[in-house]
Amino acid sequence: MNPGAQPRTRKKMLATLDGEVFAKPPMWLMRQAGRYLPEYREVRGQAGSFLDLCFNPKLAAEVTLQPIRRFGFDAAILFSDILVVPHALGQKVSFEEGYGPRLEPILNEKTVAQFRTFDIERLSSVLEAVSLVKAALPSETTFIGFCGSPWTVASYMIAGAGSKDLAAVRTFAFRHPNAFAGLIETLVAASVEYLVAQARAGVEVVQIFDSWAGLLPVDQFVAWCVEPTARIVRELRAQAPGLKIICFPREAGSKLKSFVAGVDADCLALGTAEDVGVVRSQLGSNVTLQGNLDPLALVAGGVALEDSVRRVRGAFEGAPYIFNLGHGILPETPIAHVERLIELVRAD
Ligand code: CP3
Picture (tube, rainbow, N blue to C red):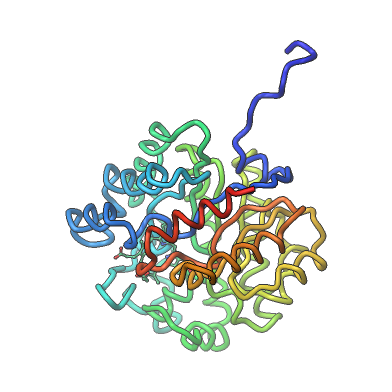
């Protein structure tokens, strides 16, 4: 390269994950492919069940690309679900319209032992979707893969459904600590194998979704969230060098400090209720942050949206950060509000 040449342009999202600060941050939205988009609803209608859509490489690739075509977000996230991992462990998983996920619940130490073997062949169609998306993405768009954290996936595996208070999984972990640790260990190994396979098929970043991290007391948070996630990240660093890692220990609040001390992530995603100022004062600016607009402000639109975006941008200003929601976009979100959001984030 001659001395006056500019460095090769890098994707904004990857540069931000390396610590670069932009006045106009890169942006994407959690659950950006989904029911608020008419083009998603159309493909979803053709596909059959939600899992049929996840396991159809062409259609999964198509819905991954829809929000990129429509909005030009800085990153595409693979269309799939965290519960394909229990499926590949041999647990029956289905999604019921208007109810959410249903799995055959794990009742005791004996039934937990049935789910030890992760068969990645059962996810070959997901990896095929990754290759299809990779081939079709614009050169400036970053490609994100993902999995659920062992704790969050285990919460669905034990209860057999979503749960507000996590009573089933927390009781199980108290009653059967060894069996529960075995399940977490299985999920650590499965997550590593799955994310490394996604990286080999073309994702540049992975996000580990720990939706239910915030509910745990600190000692259990360290045992079931921090330590297993730290093991996944260590293995990824060894087996997929260069892969960027975003962790989302949702609403961990004051426990974020122990998360950052234990887990070597490139970026920490913050839930809607986190106080960004407090997080920044506690963590310093070594780690890139992502978040955390209230998805309901996006549903409401108008002044509420304008004020909320201003507040979020102000709170993260000067730090390397990726603009996102604090949780997934809601199906009732008007498309015009997403368009306005993009104008606001990309405005001077
Ligand atoms: O972000 C994206 O666009 C990528 C796709 C994605 C989905 N689920 C698609 C989906 C991702 C990253 C997920 C992660 C996921 N799945 C999480 C972690 C993030 C979070 O929201 O806390 C969790 C807990 C799940 C489990 C899950 N999947 C639930 C509880 C539900 C039902 C609730 C709902 O919104 O309907 C799902 C279904 C699901 N996963 C849908 C989508 C688009 C809706 C299904 C449909 O289209 O009918």
